[in-house]
Amino acid sequence: MPQPILSPVLEKAGIRHAFFTRHGGVSQGLYAGLNGGIGSNDDPALVAENRRRMAAWLGVEPTHFLSLYQVHSPDVLHVTGPWSGDRPKADGMVTATPGLAMAVGSADCGPILFADPQAKIVGACHSGWKGAIGGVLESTINAMERLGAHRSRIAVALGPMLSQQNYEVGPEFRETFLKHDPANADFFRSGPRETHPHFNLPGYIARRLAKAGVAEIDDCGLCTYADEDRFYSYRRMTHRGEKDYGRLLAAIRL
Image (tube, rainbow, N blue to C red; front, side, top):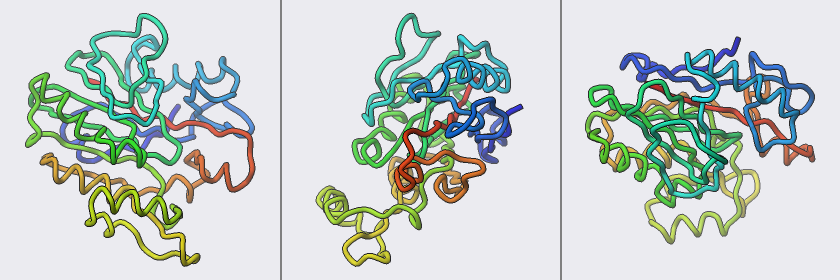
């Protein structure tokens, strides 16, 4: 069975959720473990079995275990039932409908789960740097509020993602963030290469969430690049010159 990481904050709120790891799956080779990536080149039958196991762990039917065609956008959908066709292109979902598991994929980007347990509304979004600076976090909160949630009650859990220690970027990357807000200098520190600083993605996400006024933020503090046993990593694949990589899924349901 899968061996997900759980957020104490969401557990305390009584919200069923999971940051799934590689453990408990049937994929082989580069994808060894619980690869949930429909967009990977893994055997589709193995991916389907992995996703069936994740759905079962969350207590939903495989047809009600929903994921998106992610495009690093600020777009967030209100979900009321299974997809009627292809996966929609977006990077976040919210629902007030019990029995639906909303899953977001990642392999270094941030999987973020949201819950207002009083209003019984949950959300999930995929937040890499493009999505974060583009507003996907705030879009998810706004979409939840349109359903009756209130940000002062929303608990947010940050799953495993690329840590600052392993997130080297170029000078143009830093300039993009400084042009957006000079205070973003806080999220860069010097690395071994003078012209290539290291970026703090979880810290940046957490600050945006705090500014948005959510009730509580829980960061698991785990790095996808550093822990190959449990996590897939796009950057690790790139450094090794491998052809593809698996995708981790994080999911939440009412």
